[in-house]
Length: 494
Image (cartoon, rainbow, N blue to C red):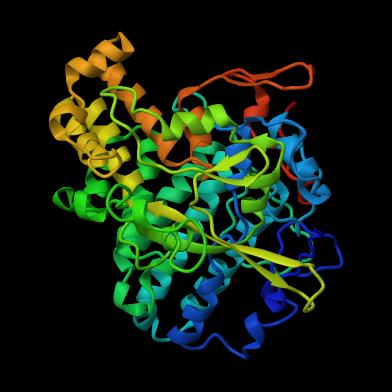
C-alpha cells in the first residue's frame, strides 16, 4: 500500500522553518476574510492540536517493542521508519510524513501557529472579554504542543541541568517572514513558558463554549495536563491539586474504562467494536481526543519491530503483585503480530478505487487512567502510600477478570514481597508496571523511560547486534529535523 499525504488546512498551514519560498501568512486562515468574532476564532482553534501521531515514535523506541521477525508484510513506506525508531537512527523524513519525528515536529508547530494567530486576533479585538474562552484554549493548547516538543526533542526536565540543556523554540507570535531565526534557549525556559501559558489559560476555559468539549481543552483535560506537567517537574503537591481538579477521587471507579464488565463483551471488529468505543467522545475515560493523520495501526500490526508475543503475554497474563488475571484481550492483525485492539484506523482514498490515500486515527491525549496513576505517584512521593494503594486497587477493580478484592487487591506486604524492596520503591515499580501495560501501543511508556532513566535493550532475531539505550545515551533525545537548521536551530549531539 502506498501512502499519499496531503496538507491539511492548506490555506494556513504555517510551517515553522520551511524553505525560503514559503511564507506563513500568504493567506488568511481557512479563507476567512477576518478573524473578527469569537466564533471564527473558535473555528481556527480546531486546528490548534497536533494532527500528527506520536505513538509510533514513543512505542517503537520503548521496551514495548521487540523484533517480531521477517514474517511481516512488506510495506516499504514505513519499513524504514519502523527500523529507524527501533535502532535509534535519526529518521530522514519530511514535514509531510505521518508518524515520524519530523512530521510530529512540524505538526506541533502548525498547531502552535494556529494558536498564535488566534491570540493575535483576540489581542486586536475591541471586545476582548468576549474572547475569554478562546484565549484560554489557545494558551493551553500552545503550552501543550511546546510541552510535547520539549519532551521529545530536548533532554528530559532535570532540576540540576535544565537551566543549561538546550530546549526548543517557544514561539509566541505569528510568522511574518519566510525564514525567521530562532534560539532554542533552555529546557528550563521552555518549562517556565509552558507553565505561564497553562496557568493563565486554564481559568479562562469554558466547557460550555464547545459543541463537543472532549475535542478541545476542556477544564478536566487542562487540569490533567497540569497534573502531568507538574509530575514531570516532580512538584507533587501540585500534581495532587490538579489531578483532583481533573477527576474527583470518589468518581474514579465510574470513569475508568470498563474493561472487565463492558469491554470484555465487545466484538474485536465491526460495528460496535472495542476499537470504535475506545476513542469515542462518549467514553468517560477520555478527557481529550484529537484526530491524527496516521497509519500507526498498520505499523503496529504489520511492522517488524513491535509488540512481540512475549510483550503481549505480559499484558494479557497475570497481574504481577497479587496474581489476578488481566482482562486485556489480544488479536492477530497479521502473521505473528498480536495487538490489544484499541486502535481504530480510518482509511480515506484520495481517488476512489486507487488504494492510495490517508489514514486517520483518533488519539486520546489525556485519560482518567493517567490521572489516577499520576495522583497515585504523587501520593507515593508525599508519603501517603495507603492512598496510592487504594487508587491502584480501584484501577484493578476494572482490569482483573472476575475481580475479587479479597484475593486480587494489592497490599503493602504483597508489594514489598514481590519487588523485594521498601514500600515506596515497590509502589513506584508497581505504577511503572501498570502504566507499561495500560498504555501499550499508545507511546506513553517512552516518557516513563525518560523520567526514570530506564535502560532499553532492543534485541534482534537475525543475529545482528542488539542495541542498548543506556540512561545517558544522547539518542534518548530525538534529533531536530534537518530542515529546522534554516532557522538557526542547532541539532542535538550524537
